[in-house]
Image (cartoon, rainbow, N blue to C red; front, side):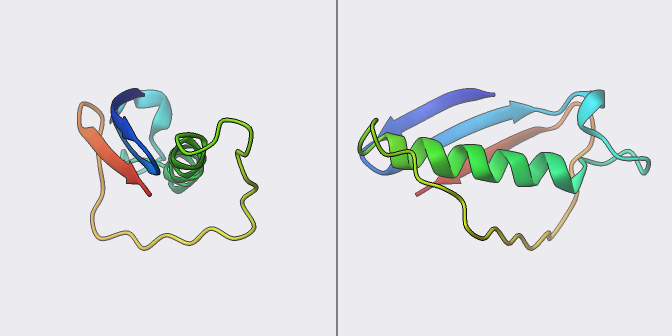
Length: 78
């Protein structure tokens, strides 16, 4: 994961999809994307105040397509 932009309350990262992130169908595992969502959300909070990372109480995701090995995901947290 590479942070490509960071400012007050907003973070953008890119993640190159490696084979260890795939499920048995050859697409990114939902647990991997859930973890990325959680991490990027925390980074957005930390961009406002490094002493308050917050705690995830609930996380929901809707998937519209899948990513495969070699793809690059761009994730924004606000």
